[in-house]
Length: 82
Length: 456
Image (cartoon, rainbow over all chains, first blue to last red; front, side, top):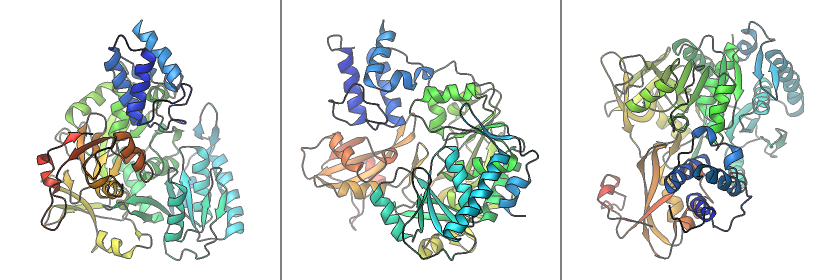
């Protein structure tokens, strides 16, 4: 993990790289409806987050309430890192 | 008896639920009343024999309105709601479409008055050829009747209970093999859009007590991403697409311990199901896609192509005599797939005659993507080919010979999205100095591995 880099920034850059979008997107923008990411992108993001933060996101946790926007992903990832 | 009569007449109890969800409860009787009332109204409003484009969604409104169009003796052409407005206008003109549905399933006139004069047009679905041009596969009532009946008999679906439809209903597999089968057998269906958030799909299967489910390999691979999800309620799984890898099959059996696991071979033009095989068949783990289902005959041509003859074969491609003639010769459908049949009649698929490949259940025509890439000002020449992928099976990637080195992956990807759907757009791009060509200037696809490339 890049300890010195802010967690939010890392997640943002993963979403931006995999979603092929600019990294100035709104943290409340819906990952599917607003940013236009598809199911394959979500899977790739999950796999990348697992690798980057050395965590194991359970499939059953990949739900709208945890992954619909950057803010929610941020809160969810921090809860796993603790 | 025709399929239209059978759908409601064969049901023992019309008061059984067709859809029973947290939000919606609709019995077969409710559906019957709605369809017959509204189809009479539609007939009075627009007459019969109109070509009507209906955008598919995995919801009850789509199903109700599809049936209304069918029962009003009009001709529904089911399509993907992802098409851009420009594309739809092009399709409307090309195929002389009379009406089109809006997002509330209101029927809107296109001001094209030419009526459909082709016989036996029950339903039509889009498919794409090797160049990516849209083709519309026209299926008759008899074709769907035969295919659904053979599927019910051969795949042990005589008494299905809670069926989950999660594949988009513009896919022939979901529409015919799942929806029409449910309508005939009186199964209770549960609809789910292919959600991005696959944890919701897992909850859906568990909470709705789903017994029967079908998907493409990618659907199940996401479900199996982590251990601990055992689905005891599921009794019947069908994986659409090709034969499964041995490890994946075994893993599926582990996660769905009480399920029959079916694989089969099919294509929209064949109506769609051609073969089927269950996990316990000794040839399943050998990679066979099974034996032909009832009323379907398969054989291999001299050059190794799988040929299919059945009562379920499409009538024709709409307004496309040339491609129809190339696809159906002497009553045999030329599938474009190559394979062999063993001495016991089991079919094995080897590959394709053309360059098309499947990625996560989507048909990918490299030429179509290459045409889009080649139209970008910074690209001199592109070649698109499949790379192995843990989830998708195969994914499209592109090697580019550039005119201008100042280019980013995002830039190319976003250019492609103007013309292509996300599900078929490459996400990985390589650059090279030279793309291998034949003396005629065609891409040497077999030599693609020799191409020196670096990631953009």
